[in-house]
Amino acid sequence: PFGEKVELDKSYAYPATDVKGFDLEIANGKITVVKTDEEFVQIDVQVKSTGGEEALTRITDGLVELQDGKLKIASDNKFAQIKVRLAIPDKHYDVFVARLLNGSIAIEHLDATLIKAKTFNGLIRLEHATFAHAELTSSNGAIEVRNVIGDDLETETANGRVYIDGELKEVEAESVNGHVVVTTTSKVAHKIK
Image 1 (cartoon, rainbow, N blue to C red):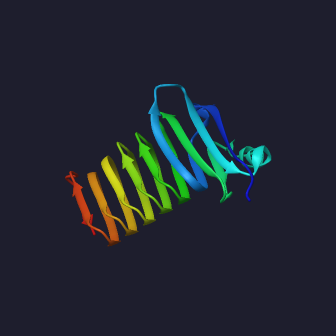
Image 2 (cartoon, one colour; image 1 turned 45 degrees about the vertical axis):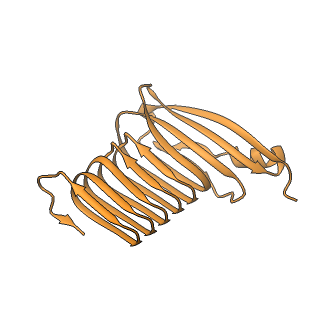
């Protein structure tokens, strides 16, 4: 009734010197961030949808764009599944924001002043990251934070465990239904709530 299922893989690359931040907003899919030794930001996108080739074209047109140093990846199509893999060079970024309705967010080796990740249904994992402030929110899914260095971390989930381990000065961690485990190695930690 919805038309044939179609799939498309597409890649984009931008010089790392042009990218200062990231803003990702996808209805359904998965976001993965990994480190690269290359001099450019590599984005690999896999789109699955119904509705044939026209639907894929509508989804991928304008899906990825670089505006004023901010790399934006956005689609509000609720009938498509979009998997995004970002390979980012090791440098400091101003901001990283990722929002999903359904799907997981996995971030590794990110150095940013502000990191925000939110999903309604899915796991959020942050590893080997450095930040001034990070906010991780899931309505239905676990939150795992390991080997991070940061000033201020806020995590919240309704259903799922919260596991935090890093060098953190301030931590606020909440789970309505699930265990919360917080470990900080910071010698100047002053708030765990």
